[in-house]
Length: 323
Image (cartoon, rainbow, N blue to C red; front, side, top):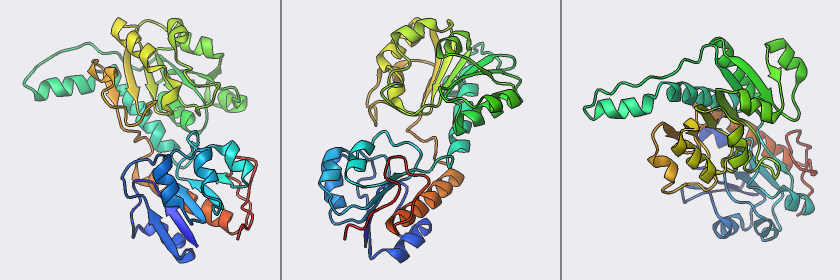
């Protein structure tokens, strides 16, 4: 059995892959150090039975080019770069690792929120360059935080906000009202959430219905001077509209860990003050990495063994024997 492993943090000899190494005849690794595009991915997947996937572009073309592939296990919770519909049609199950990185991503979102409120990156750079700049920040105490997507990560952010006595409101089309009641969170519409918020934190999957959920129109609903955070998926933001809103002062601070194109190149956002940009690193803590690796390996072994996987995201829950 041959297995491709593409997360950039995983290298040959990684002890987290010991169980896969025992089960496989050959492990193949990503040699590029970055997420894979179609052609490179097709070449590496040739002859593979299993695939432990990073942030690669798993298109219909890729899947149809690899008829021996039996299962895909994503190292992470997102799967917007995997054509799950095509995988279903070909009988290839796709599994993810829900909840494994919730603490890490939630904490990064909150760290960005605090840093933007006090202009920490800007002041740090100025001081190190010989300046002695003073700026007036804002406190989080008593402010309104809108969490857009109250899943596992959004709940971590809500918990952190509660520690600073913030008012938490949330929009989620599948919101857990009992959780909201127990934790003092107000469930509101999307428009009301972004209209009332001093801080907005996005925690949604990238779907047709959520792509550019922050756009020219929805930005107009926001308060002047709002602080916006996206540690979720890059396509949630219309980056051109956000850039214009930053230039006008409508949005006073932006924290972004995911971009529509990755790497983003010379984004105009990077030339603006009070923008924090990180390289899709929300899940990159030791604890989250270990949790995701463990779950991803277990999911792949379950699927390759013909067992049903409760973390499968498509219609196909287990791998048929294609040999």
